Image: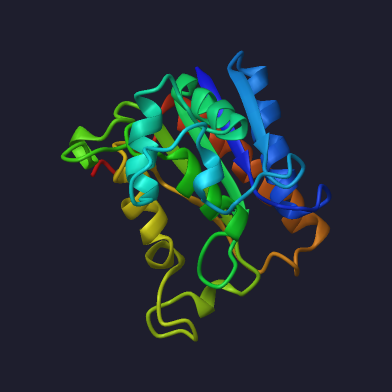
Length: 222
C-alpha cells in the first residue's frame, strides 16, 4: 500500500510528531511505501493565490476555475502544488496529523486542502462524494486536542464532540472528494500525560494504524 502522511506541527518533539513517527515505523515494518509531507519543515505556503499557476486564463480571476484550467495544461501549477498532487494521486491511504486549533486544523493544513485538493484533481462539477475524483482512496485524521475529553461533549464546555467539530474536514473536505473516511484517532489532554499514559497512547496508535491498513473501520462512505 502507498501511504501519504501529511504532518502539520512545527515541533519535532511534540506528541503529534511522536504519533506520526510511530505510524511511519509501523507502516514501514509492514512493507508499505510511506511518503511524508512535513508542511512546516518544507515551508509550505498556505495562502492560495494567482502565483499558484504557471499561466492564467486572462479573465476575471477565479481560483477554482484557474485550478481546473491548470489541470488541462499538464498540471500547470506551482512546483510545490504539483509535487503534492502527485503524492496524493499515488497514495492509497492518506494520514493527517495535526493539533486542534480554534476548533479546526492549523492554517498551514487548511492551505494544503485549498491548494492541493484542486478542482479538476480532487473534485469537479457533479464529481463529489460517491462520484468524487479521489474515489477508492482512504483518509484518516489524527487530531490532538489540549483540553480534556469531558469538554468535548454536547453538554460540556465546548457543546460538541470532537468528531462533530471535525465534521467539516471529514465530510466537507475528504468525503466530498470521494475518499473513504476512516475512524479518526483522537487525543485529549495532550499536555498532561504521564510517562505511562504517553507510552500507552503510542501503543494504541500503533494498533490503530495496523487496523487502518488491514481491517479499517469507516467513519463515512459519503
